[in-house]
Length: 163
Image (cartoon, rainbow, N blue to C red):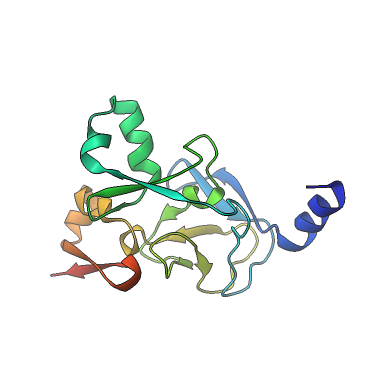
């Protein structure tokens, strides 16, 4: 990008930055008001392509590498969806933290996220992991919530089923 394009993007299409989260480690925070229905990550990874890697192959990696993949790549139907650019160049959406009261939603299995309501300056952007990542079923927090299974629906959207 040229200088003018960067300044234009900053003024008109930059809504978030990374910061320290009270929920967990790093989080994504609004640096200006974000309207409902806005994708604040538009352009973060243009033309992003995802590579499907079977869970069994990830399980063979050394623990720190396995943790990197399981922390950032959603698991759907036994396959981790990894960014084709690798894990050194991932966009801010990978730092969305989980919440029972999310202000972000996905309608395409976690490829894109939009705001479900207006988000005010300083607010952390949050998503419900169980709407697109079946890894959540393996975590104790979700087991305590009695989420017993997950089904891939049309468009690979993941829905939770509670007892």
